[in-house]
Image 1 (tube, rainbow, N blue to C red):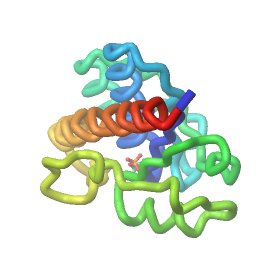
Image 2: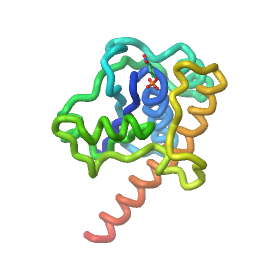
Image 3: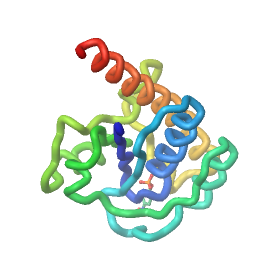
Length: 159
Ligand code: 4NP
């Protein structure tokens, strides 16, 4: 089964929203994917998502019952695609022990309509900033589903 790991700094704001939104979209589309999220930092390991992320995620019909963890080297083996929220996450992932840079992409690179390359960190922002992050991630996740669908049809065609 194809697998995707969302990565941000703390794993309490952006990447759990990415995980939860893609899980809801995949269920709606009847697509089987393994989906997880992690942080490059370890400050929030074991914590639930930020209450503002929980709020905006639930308003979008997502299950936000998640727990933060840090990125680990074996993630590069276990996941087909690793989705970073911003350039800082991307460069940290490139330098991670055991990194497989070919698997790492920016979330907004999956959104052809994106006006910027990054999903900005909303941690020091307002609820409105979390709503904007969720909107960016809805579009990025739709692109990720599309990515796996085109991969699948390419595989079928080559058989
Ligand atoms: P996230 O947001 O990377 O989207 O989970 C942050 C959460 C916590 C911190 C920074 C960003 N922090 O500095 O603790």
